[in-house]
Amino acid sequence: MRITIVGAGPTGLFCAIALGRRGHRIQVIDRDAGPPGSGLWRRRGVMQLHHAHTFRVPVVDALEAEMPEVLDDLVSRAATVARADDGRPVALLCRRAMFDAVLRRHAEATPGVLLRSAAVGMLTGPAGRVLADDVPVDADLILDATGRSGRITGGHRGVTHDCGAVYVTRQYRLRTAFRPPTNSPIGLSLQLGGYIAIAFLHDGGTFSVTIIHDGSDRRLRELRHADVFERAVRAIPQLGAWTTTSTAVPITPVLAGGRLYNAYRGQPVLPRVIAVGDAVCTTTPLAGRGVALALRQARELVDLIGSGPRTDTDIGLVRSRFEAWCETAIKPWFDDQVYADAHRLRRWAGAGIDFAARLPSDLITAAAAREPALAPLIGAYERMDALPDTLAAAEPSARAVYAGGWRAPVAPGPTRAELGAMCAGAAARIA
Image (tube, rainbow, N blue to C red; front, side, top):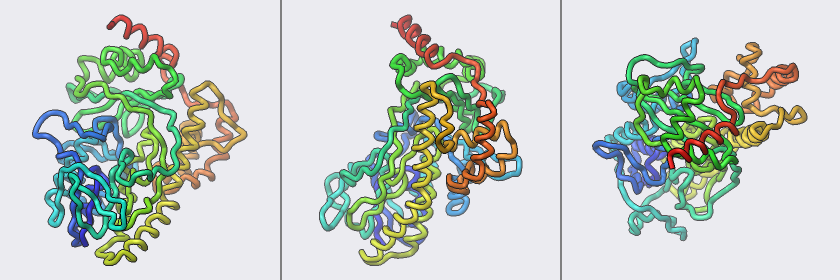
């Protein structure tokens, strides 16, 4: 079957490799021509390419199951599969740009797969064909893997909720083998007064430092300036230890992440078109589930397509089955994140825990730091082996932890208001 995949991100490339190996003729179309021979890869429309990423367990599972040589290639390039004490994978530690570049090289080497650089549009008539540089492309099936910012399906927007978070991030490289302390397999995560700061481990001694806040204090916009960002990071002692001039050197500018949304779009009403990945569901980057949910979808869709279908009726059946699967296997993660984000925003604004409501998932999992007996009840959720509703078994114990007065510790460092004042002062001195 002739399959056109629009979008050469992780979802589109994974589908291309997997479907190409099943005998389909694949054409991947993206306006980006791929990574340059040297220098920073700048992908238009993919603002998060050089932002902090953690690839959760489903990413490792997908690569191991479908294309283990890609995972081997990443590890050979100094990516790391972080593992728990029992040996099970926790995450793949790797920069997003390297992940995409390696996946792209394997797609280019897959027989039956062609990657094209072209401006993409969609003919929305009965034919439902893709336009590449305004020229129609014949295909039996079109996969929309254009991600959160894709527009080829027109008004296909679905349900959206503000994540209530904006962030700034910067990548660094360690100067030596010495690595400052961490508090999780993915790096260092700090809860502060009204915001979050994280050091994400990547490949080959690289890491990202990210500050996340709700965007209500306009003074924090000054964090986009390198001098202000560095001053703010140094004001958080545990985080500042990562970025001293003797410890690390910056390798990217300071990069701002715009206001983002949790979105669930489902499927577009277009003939022979199936959306997959972020084109179906987007969740806040705070949870780090984006690529994990996308590749979980990709695996399911590839299995449904198999070596067929052959007719438009078959394609419609695949689409309806995939949509039904997403409603039960993907949408619960969207609903979970929307609920958790709403409660996080209340707490960042100074409100206490709402004991009259169901506890959000982030509070339930955090309570395990106080009550170790919760660990077996939340482990499958954290690995994404079980859906969010399985946390119901852990909620009574977590609720008791908070009712007893315990709260997650706040790391040393300025409050959000103090950070805002510091940013304003630093920006004034620079000006």
